[in-house]
Length: 260
Length: 355
Image (cartoon, rainbow over all chains, first blue to last red; front, side):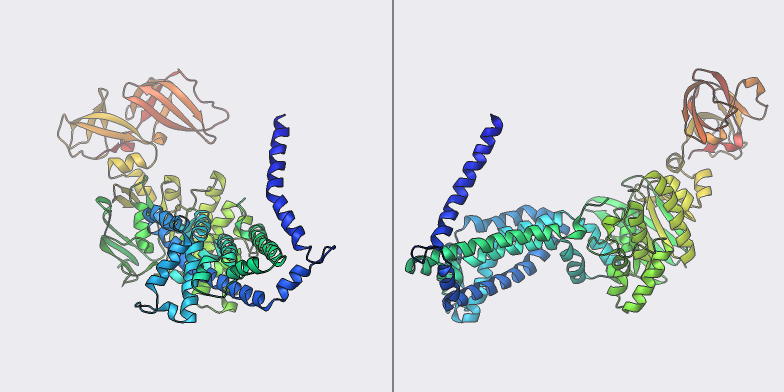
């Protein structure tokens, strides 16, 4: 009886999660009257606006990942190594993103960095892109921080650092050649999560008026019938692909196996 | 002047002074062990030499050059850690060649040196393996090769054998000593294991409470401890209370029996003095009547017999307290049973007077 209840709960959960997705998938294939087809996907992928916004968001996601790694990895490394008492403060700061709505953050950015401010980033496309990357980095901070922090917790950080130093390595070499390769799987996890967040993000891109994929999704949802369903399926597929890549990265990371 | 010179080293963490004025000179090619209980400051001294801790006061010189203010990566000091600290993402060969790569040594030269080091540690075929594919002993040998590859001026070993099982520990300590002798590298070895320190070192520094209690050759440290702490920390010790009867002649009484010590005692007649005996200088006799006039005899009852293989440790109750003694195992002469009445014999010249 207990076993039956467990399976029934799992079955209900599967139906609850997958039925809407199946419905959406089925709807996205019904663009051609009376037959299933990939017309909606063809229409979406052939749309120059889709290509431009998707390409832009992918570029922004990659730059956000690079920026996030450059900021988060050395910070977490230093806090774990030299300032362990600051870890609760770091935890608090990184969690702030989850409790402060993105719209509040972006309005704060616009007030601080508008054209009449001391650093008028919104005055140029390049400046606004920088602001957008910073905003995305803040949004993904809780995930990137936790991923890297967990990765660093799994290695003997202090001893590996000292071993590298005793062999002549400076701080940058220690980070680049010893620490980063050993937390690469964790960094990749953070990177894929960041990618998934940035690809679908709407508020920052819309309010900073940048041609990103998030605003395109909303626009398409309001102006087309079958294409939004196809776009949603594509977005889901991308997210799942990211999750699959995290799993593959963990599986094929040979050196992280436990010692004999 | 010593090759490695530590003068007036002090280290405090807040109000806690961990190292209190530590002085030590080490000759080139010498193997010196820092031996002491946990918290005595031995690892802190080693970390100051490595550059991982900055001394509160004092100076560190290597070959006449002051290195106190240099960063760890500028000192050219090799270090082996208790936890191996091999880089998990690199193969054995890459680990060994890491320091050479940092130093900008050419690939060909690095490959040759790595091969030389792997041969030295007896693992010439293991270059392509990852650390997780090696046993603990193999990992520690690779760590040693990695530390030695860049030809450091000084080698520091921070309890490198502690994480290994007993058999490997014994074989690896002689391997480390052989390699050190072969390369003639100045070495500091930190351990809390007296057997390791005594068996491997040219000199042993016994540390207590942030100070060097005694510095000397293992034979000297073991047989002529200068302080009560050294006597008690190094080796097993039996202690006896004695009353001085003639300080100048070194005469005392133990349990009312006279005993002549080999040297004068720096205390007044009638004063109480502590005596110590190593287990191996106490002998077991079936009958006190068999003991010759020059030796000291103490009636005893066997309280415990611990068979350790080559040696049998016997504990005997006496009027002066429990005395431990060691017997060599002989198949034709089994140890006495527990409860047997025996006599313990020792000579005055084997007694250590505790300061």
